Structures are given as C-alpha cells and as structure tokens.
Image (cartoon, rainbow, N blue to C red; front, side, top):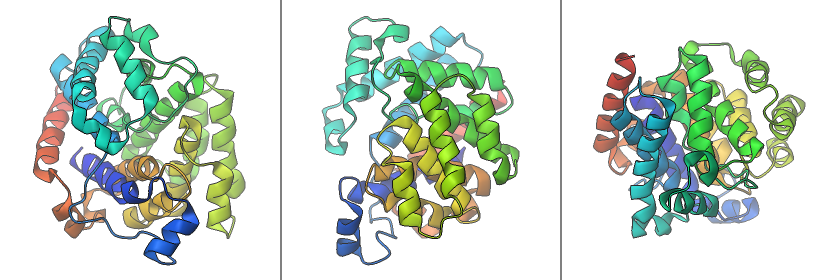
Amino acid sequence: MEAILLGLALGDALGWPVEFIWLPGIRERYGAAGIVDVPDPAVYTDDTQMTVALMRGLIDAGPRAALDEQTAGGGARFGEWRRDPAIEVTSPGTTCKSGLDRYLAGTSWRLSGIEHSKGNGAAMRVLPVGFLYQHDEARLRDLAVAQSVITHRHPAGVAGAVAVAYAVKLALDGVPMEQWVRRILAFVDGMSDELDAALLRIGHVLAWNDEDDALKHLGEGWVAEEAAALALYCCLRRPDSYVEAIRLGVNITGDSDSIGCIAGGIMAARLGEAAIPAEWIGRLRDADALRGLARDFSALRAAL
C-alpha cells in the first residue's frame, strides 16, 4: 500500500499546478513537454486528502466490520476533512462538500450523495478499496459503491469509482494490461451506460499516434466516467513507466490532478515503489506520515 499511496499523492501533486490551465497554456508556461517534474515541496490536494480520510475511517471500523460501520467510519473522517477550513486552498469539489454537508446534518449515507452528480470525487479517493479487498470482489464492489454514494449517487459516478478500485485489483493481480478494459467492463456490467461508452472509447483511441487528440476524445476528466477512461488510457499507453503515465495524464485540458492521482495509484500498484523516483518521494509533503498510514492499512488487510 505504501507504493500506491505515494504514487497517487505524487500524481496529484504533479497535476495540481496545471489543473485549471488549458493545454496550450501549460505548454506556454512549462515548455513543449508540459509539466514534467513535481514541485519542491510536492503538495497534494483534496484527492489525496480524501483518500487518506477514507483509509483512516476504514482502519477505525476494521476490515470485518459491516458495510454500515465501514461507511460510518469513512464518513466521520470525511467530516473532519470537511470541517477543516484549510481544505479550501485545494479547491475541493462542490459535490463532495454538498454531499458531506447533508450527511453531517443527519441524512443517511445511502441518501446524502448528490443524485445528479457524476463528478470524479468518489473515483479519485477509492484506490485503497482495490488494495484492501483485492481478493474479495463482492466486498470490493460493495465498499466502492458505499464510499461513493455518501457524496455521489449518479450511476456513472458510482460506476466510475468501482472501475477504478477494480483496476487496482487487476494491477496487483498482475493481469495482462490488454485484458483490463474487457475485465472492467464485465465487472461493472449494468451499472452505467455512460461508463461503458467511455471505457469502449479507450479501444478506439489507443493506437492513435496523436495522443493529444486521443486524450481530448476521451474527455476532460471532471466526471467519473471520463476520469476513469483517461487514467486507464495513460496506464495502457505507458505500461512500463509510472513517471511517463502520470506526465501524460496531467498534461491535458481538464482535471489534471485527479487523472494524475488515479493513474499514479494504478501504476504504482502495477510497478511498485521502485518505479517512483526517490527524489520525488523526498519532496512529497508528509511522506513519512503517508508511509505510516499505508503500513497501518496494510496491517488491516493482513487481518482479513
């Protein structure tokens, strides 16, 4: 889990400086290759913060707790995050904040999520679920859904989170990457036509020479089905390089930090910490604290 958490946090940190800049502006500011190096310090955003909150909530509840207890654990930690005024610096998503406001006001987690929002807020934070329940697909799906609907209840938002969690499992399992899209489509079958269509577009563009056009065709990533498709495309296009996969993912017109976060976590699950530059880890804010949390979370899985 250490590699996954460091990998997603660094993908998040690489993308944050360019999140709201169109691609031409990124290249004007950083050069033809776009942003290629994490800042020093490498500061992550709400994507990683909410991932950390989910991990802490699951540790609080325990790996064998009922789904309601696990979701309550995550909800309590999300509430701590929501009440911290410092989060506004990272421009957290409106849906995450609104859904949590409803939950904290007493609405059941099953109803607190915004029903019309398919934003990527649940997909960006779900990667630890794929690690925790790598060997229990039914529980992986149930928990990925539950941690989603507390803020996002649109079918595409929920299905996008399930797809990302399952991609982590496939990476950890060592499943050949050419099977990933087919396997994910089968796992999310019937959940969202919008997600299905977005994942199928990956096959359309994977062989295109013009990666800018391919990424544009897949979308901007603000919604869950596009975020999942973009992150998976980057992983499939750069299957042997954590660094190149997240560089590809953040240099877009769109939600750069979320795509970097998702792709970074998946690629770290596939390739391990050795694929992440040690210099980057040395720049990462709170790297030691993240490592400690990851070790605690790994112990949680070991208790299953």
